[in-house]
Image (cartoon, rainbow over all chains, first blue to last red; front, top):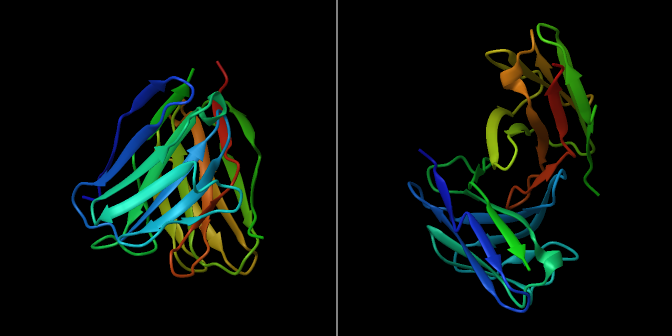
Length: 117
Length: 112
């Protein structure tokens, strides 16, 4: 149980375009989802926390207008990178908790590798 | 500011030897997590430690938590090639959303 999927797994886009990444909890209702980004050979950096039906809470230094997060249902959260630039290229990982999952645990998706050319 | 410090950051292992990764954290949290990450992949949960003195073992890996010292250790017994990966510890800050703060990770490689 507690499976989290992400789509797409890889995406290449041109500079200036927007990209949407989906995060789904497949077998539980995720009241809270987290979005992280990871640069090569670096640790995970929390970008934002989203609770279903509420606005996302962004970490300091993360541009909310650039990284749009929507958590419209208990099984789906989306991250949209708007007007992407090469410096946005990164590995984006979501995690989810809630429902039958113990509240202190997060289950991680497989990640989405974004390359902006 | 929450801080999670791992050491060492790099570990070159020899087959059959024992190693320990240390994870120091800065708050009074009593929830500590260990994850494994293979290249190009996401995180795999290894251990969840929820109380002082907690010890968990899975195969050649054993994790422990000392909340008084704010220290967790991940011990590797008789290293094998399959254990090559990056290992992260993370602290749960509590609060309403239970955010995780990650250490920098420890890259384990096997000496040929």
